[in-house]
Length: 408
Image (cartoon, rainbow, N blue to C red; front, side, top):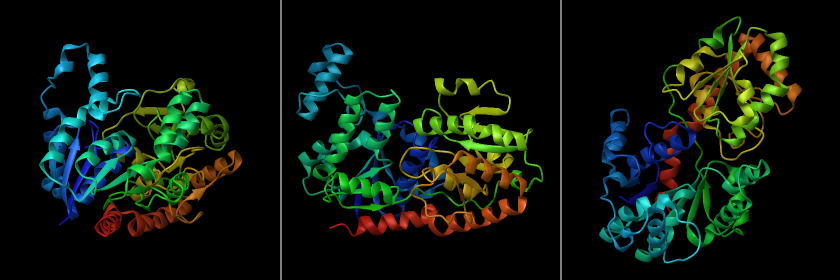
């Protein structure tokens, strides 16, 4: 059995509270079913292992939490906090330029201990936050296969953020450089969509091997679709973290350009906005609108899906695949999305999802589904079949196993 080390430098991997952590946790779970798996994480070992109640395979994971490490005591400890971290980072990395990476400083002592202790067949790095580990890994094992799991093409997201004045150009330059030089640092890449894989391969001059490992969902036995069956629907649903630029941008576009048209046909309809994160300034004016209900972070999204007749994904930018589309399909809610929002998902427009890119088309699609319970149920059934055949995490996990198990 192959041995795999995965680095997930986040505090709340389980229970996952956003799309990124859903992918991280389910990748861990699937790897645990097939391989001898070691995990480095910032979450406490005790809280992470509560997942074994629902996911028994997690019990076999060797979990190493940065929270179990004693405070570092070295020559730098006598210095003020920021200065000691800056110098310690440069000492660890054997480089003298660039800002210190706080996440790297957290997981470095654990990584160093494990690399000294044994060799692994493959090391999986989750997202850009763990790419800093590569130089340390290569010092101990030049032959180990390093696989980067890319949740998005971060340079594409960063470019949008720069346009919105939400990120400095210098930061975009660093992300661009890191992604364009992946072929020099990792052996393969996992992406959420074919489009993302094509972008990475092109950026890396066709020198970066990779495979699409799409986002998935756990197919629930029960549908949460009371609202879908209502003759006069009361709610539609937008689900997503509000600090995400694509989400906030898409929601604002929907509210300003589409929502008024829908309200003319359905004056009583309300929009449920379910998602964590501080409401950005651009959306502050929406909070006082009685036709919208902002829930903030919720422990369980199912009751909100259960109230709604349709889910909307009005995204204009972004990359990867929308777990919220797959989640809505699995729970029984028909989805109306832009083509950008549904990017990376294999769908049949008008059968298992409705795609609309113009303001008029999107408004018309929502109104049409709100008027027809028969159409809502038809899309629900086709979407559920799509999930069961292509996007169940167990199916995705089998593909991941095949790819990693055949790496030379």
